[in-house]
Image 1 (cartoon, rainbow, N blue to C red):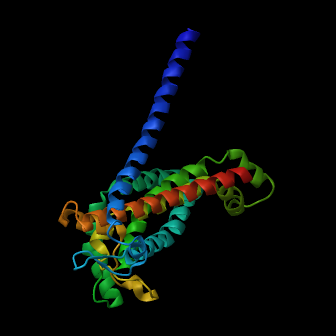
Image 2 (cartoon, one colour):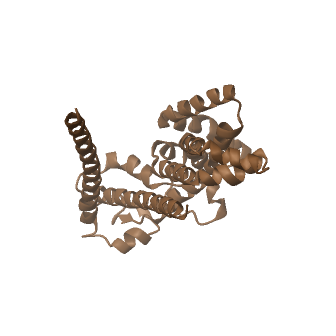
Image 3 (tube, rainbow, N blue to C red):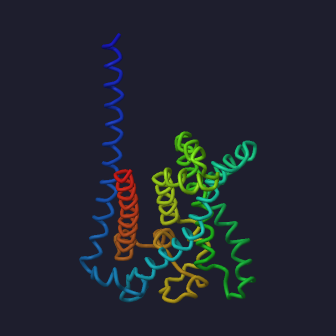
Length: 296
């Protein structure tokens, strides 16, 4: 009986190991694939000009592939999204986990999961037909397709991820923490703010980083509601102007390029930059979590 149990555990362990190795191999192959085609561009185009160039004119003669406006556009939209989604998401998670009555909690949590299941193209359509005209009229702009519109829609998309994971992290805090704090004379608000939330900070941090990853990698929303103008967002009022992102550029132009052309390889180089940024965000998130656990 014990031998059968050990054999079963051994098989399960090897299956899990195989899944892990396969996942790593897929990531490495994706990186190698992007790098191979991206390097084909830099045989005829300067890497420095590609990274620091302020103009993206892929069909001019000669073509110009400066991605700085695309990177800054992506960063601007992401910053707007996380500025909205993080306080709103964490506050909602705290309310659902600690304050809301049971019947309301049973409504809010499934509602968040339903919002997470809405296809991005549907949300983009809502942003295009409802939010963009509203922002255009309310702020008297020439167009409602701006970085602000994209940031708001991305925040709405990242919100379910942040709320769901942060709420699970708060619920995972042992009940004895709350009881000990209340027994010491702390109020419910003090217990939530100074005991429960700090104890769940590792999970909340993971929720925030996953939300940022969702915002950076989203394509359909930014393609439809940010205006797709590859201009440098260099001033504060750039949030009320059209921008273009890395993901939107790839989605918009990949179907129109000639296979093997400089434009084709430039889009792979844009994808490689996006891959590196996403990898850096995940690496920083892991580093934060590791240091937080070490300090506990």
